[in-house]
Length: 216
Length: 216
DNA sequence: TGTACATCAGTGAACGCGCGTTCACTGATGTAC
DNA sequence: TGTACATCAGTGAACGCGCGTTCACTGATGTAC
Image 1: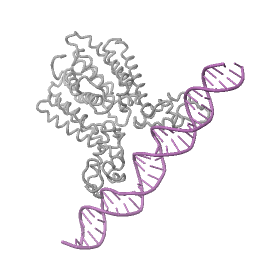
Image 2 (image 1 turned 90 degrees about the horizontal axis):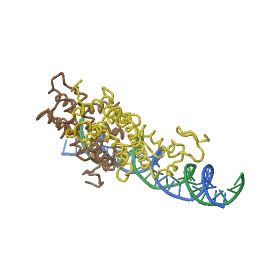
Image 3 (image 1 turned 180 degrees about the vertical axis):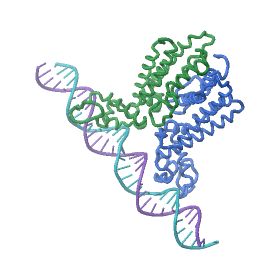
Image 4 (image 1 turned 90 degrees about the vertical axis):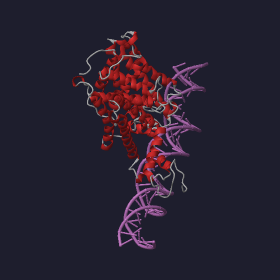
């Protein structure tokens, strides 16, 4: 460390060395604390211990940085869902459950990414890379649904696309309303995970994919 | 109209006459077009054809105005859900379906209210009136669920609170992801209403409240 | 190994802008008598 | 009905601020010879 202090970083010479990454970290920190609108280019630069003009060497403008955060968010999200699915092991049902938990876990552990992905209002048109990243995340859910549906005989097999949309919407709804760390969060007489798990169980029973008691 | 032009309003003398309402209208217009963060006190004043200091006669500050918009939003929302429920007529099932449609309809027709209510990050602590208004809206859903559950014999009756939380989360998820007018909206191979209706049907079947074919 | 030079990631000063908020004020309205 | 006055919703000018963005610049790094 030479002279200038900075956020949580360590070194500083004339060249920062890793400014691009530092700016993204700063964005995550700021978004987590103040929401996507509370993030400013100027503050991110300050956080990284760099002049306010420096970020322009790495991002066209403020929106480009947010879009990049959203993109990374989707990549991480996809990886986490994929890992939870784990090729349908140990069995389709358990793996499906794990995907649900991974969904909520991501929303809770990475509120800043989640925010940038779903609430920052980054326009998807004109950013095909971002759109594809979002679709890749959804594709994990969809593949899981397909595998899961395959246990049923073809004639009573529900449309996997619809099923995955339902699960996605339910997960997203629970995450937005109850599992986020922000000020508007509603309180709940159970954990979000329990709520999601119960909902998915009822839903799957309704599809005829699993059997069981109607109530507990 | 005397001299100063204004948004869509009509008159202007020295006294506006209805500035409080005009500012709220302005806020709705701005939020609908730019999101909750895109709303500024200054622009709302301009929209109403009034000096930038005038709003302070009616709202303590910017946040107070947004909180007021959210409050009205919840009141409207409650009224609309209530109307849809219509005391469970013509029958509990149909009425329940109507509530779902009303939910999505509100999110689509009143994106600005919806935004202020669920996305503006208005802190609920320290604003009991707002919190109660939100709970009142949810209470409609809950009462509907209770009435609906009552068709089942007590020993296989699902917990109505949980059921209403599931329906709420599913509706909110679909509304956020697919039914909103903003830029981040995902596209969908069916209407949000169809998606919600199908999801609720599956869910209710899973609870054993309705019977029916497993797939279509 | 040493020097010349191109490249590139930073600087820092400056800009114009719009915002939120305050202040002493003033014009319109409504009420008492 | 007319006048005096209190009340209150507006004005408009001013403030300090932080933002996004640009510019000519400069220090560090890496490469060619």
